[in-house]
Length: 260
Ligand code: 2AM
Ligand code: CA
Ligand code: CA
Ligand code: CA
Image 1 (cartoon, rainbow, N blue to C red):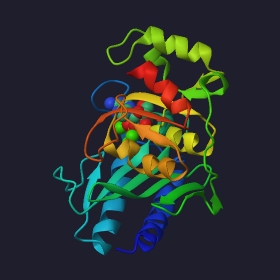
Image 2: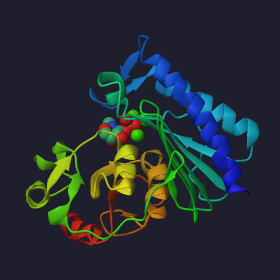
Image 3: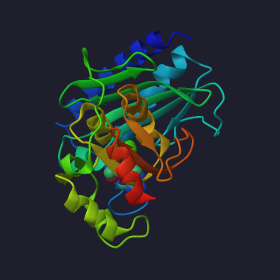
């Protein structure tokens, strides 16, 4: 498989889909809730997922697709080529802020990350990586990450995890945030992962993501020397949900001691 060619096609479809999303900001959306009152889905989440799936299957009929909104045909196997699609990552931002949302695509072959694509349509920024060829923001190569320390870091973490919860030791998270230079929460997992890749964040901690949330960002981050695992330091599986720790070297090892 020529992964560069696949990436080129995928980018083209994402740019087109991003245009649809930009246009939709001017129109009225249909908004529904899913698992709870703050878990939103809109007509555009479904429309963009269907749009991408049609494009993918038309050109690559044997590829499998796992998409958040359930239009994919994936049956939970690592064999062959698997596309992980999040048509809108950061739907709440899309609805409430009209910014800080992205389209995310990760392409895995026999379980290995081959392509990562994260498109921010509001800023017209396409973050991309093909395994072994570095990572880019539009046409500019993203430099490799240097090692860092928590005291000089900005950590991406949602304030929820600093309140009493079942997923993380919130008192330790409080200690971590106090020790760091500062914390930020963007409400868009794929964007937060590419922000670690570009150095806008030094680390990102989140206890429950699905493959379509991290699939694209993980490939991009790995290409610049970032580290991404679960809270036990184990590599992510593109077909399993779970916690995510992503950071530049040095900071990663320190953060692991807080979440283990
Ligand atoms: P989403 O916008 O595609 O749902 C902050 O909410 C981040 O966590 C977003 O990237 C969001 O993706 C993701 N997320 C994962 N599971 C979620 C859930 N059950 N409810 C809300 N956000 C979720
Ligand atoms: Ca969602
Ligand atoms: Ca998501
Ligand atoms: Ca989504």
